[in-house]
Length: 135
Image (cartoon, rainbow, N blue to C red; front, side):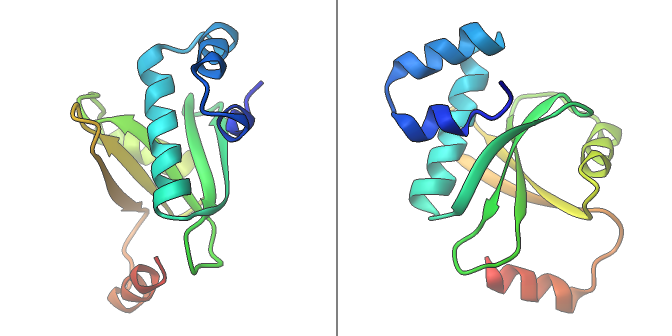
């Protein structure tokens, strides 16, 4: 079971997260991270068609969906802020999605979430400003 969105959309009941830990053998911290980023994007930022999926190449869960007032799909990868990750690993993650950009959701120990956009190659400032206006 790699699509976890059903666990989040059915209920906020902790029972579903306990099942997730057992079925997927995921740590409680990883489940909490996925849940908090999902809640932030879906309920606070009003994303549409938000799904949680798994990338076999990067071995990471990610979320795909449409930001409010946008028809462009976006990819979000939740990561704990104290996770050690090398620059080459970030490049490998971007390349594993066959897309030229993705966003990392960094969750800090106080549960705050910061979003950092990563791009492969150079992006025209005009295209970047248009993309930011659509978010």
